[in-house]
Image (cartoon, rainbow, N blue to C red):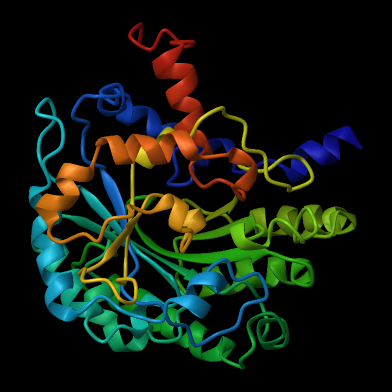
Length: 392
């Protein structure tokens, strides 16, 4: 049983370890992150997330944005999105580090492609040399094929391999439409000289699959579909419990008795791999039963990245800035002041208020942490120097 259990948690083939889901890539940021010190200017993030709109056209069983969708229905206005692209390029943090954010993940807060100006925002970012990744449910990709082809990657949250499973878990019969939209985007990127079509492992379209009770049986079919549609990879990970549901929810969203079936499905999926198509089952941010496993002491990730979200009601602000994508809508993880200008945000970054938020974080309130590897690297590599990282 032990060997079979280990196979379940095998995340990628040995010849595909240099992939976009490998958290060891964060070690490249060591020299930036070692400048994070209380009372001193700290570097701006290399990556930020932008949630352009708090709205969604699906109702996924595991939705981790439910709180913000219920309580903050809003969007970032067109002029503020375009201004943000310029401001991110010029963001100055520590004087020891060059200005500018290097990458933006466009996500939600809902479905980002419901924002009518998202195409203009993608163009505004990429024309300034800022790389863009988009996480989408895929239902509106046909409206932005040209703009999406400018991105480094597009992750499509399909989470099923059949119409039956898709409708059961996501609430609408749109599986065929999503697959058609993926095919249109991959075909376009293959025949044009665009960023999305570049022949690099981390570029292209990813077929995303959140593992949840009821969709284990579709894993192999989904991987087949992903390959047939021209996706660069199939990306599976367990769904996590949302931050606002931790108190009254089961420990995880996956029935562990399905693990034997999952093993078989993933073994079959791996037979589909080629140099141009990979199968990745990302589990390193969970324990062996796919429960959250936040194995770090403090959250320095709140200094490493942030989330630009639609403004809060009743506040004169262009956008709200949160410090954790896993706790969208949690006011404890947001700058309390209304952001009056980007210069105001620059002044807040690394300020006493920023450190007060850091000091207030209780990890028991956190769901499965996207930034667990960030925090582990900060504690073990930067603070403790457990790897003697200067000795390469």
